[in-house]
Length: 205
Image (cartoon, rainbow, N blue to C red; front, side, top):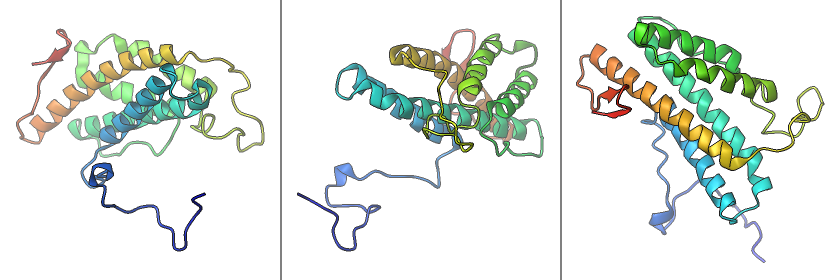
């Protein structure tokens, strides 16, 4: 039986280089971090749906990872559109979608003007649902709230296949939004955008 060893360490590289992960912490953006959380949630659901791991054991980590993805994407949108619009503030230091989503949505409406995609309104229900069950980003991380009450007593069953499909649609839309914002930001900074996004066509051009 292999037990902890003397002077045990965790964070280190090793000789099996193919298993060494590069953090790239200096270069990753909020959006990059968010995408990593989302991809990890997708991988957990794939493993559960293919019977490689018990589906009940992944539901809490999966929803937390998706929630973290959404939070970071909203903060990234708020920050980047703020730079474009010469708003001298940073993203709110809050986990609440009641704070983050109205700010991000308002910035995006200013950013797109009359061309704001109608799907922005469709996301209202998504953030309202997260707020109903997990208002402060703790419900899927802990069995108990800081007030001592048990979390998620009003939620019993979640279909993870449905979660993944819904999140894929949301992520596709937010990626389109992020691509357009990034393009405008690079133009403001007098840089040549690496990609151009055509909202009507639904793809890169």
